[in-house]
Length: 74
Image (cartoon, rainbow, N blue to C red):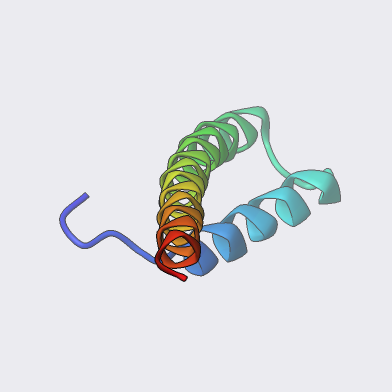
C-alpha cells in the first residue's frame, strides 16, 4: 500500500463494506471480494490499534518512572 489511509478511513471503509454485505443485494462473487477487502482492513486496523496500545503503555511506563524519580528527589 503506497499511501496508507488513516485508521478512521479504514474503519469507515470497513463499515461501508458491512452495510453493503448486510443489504443482501450482492452476487456471491461480489460478496467474496468485499469479504476479502474487509478482512484486509480488519487486519490493518488491528495492527494500528496494537501499535497505539504499545505506545500508550510505553508512555504510561515512562510517566510512572518519571513520577517515581521525582518523588525520590523530594
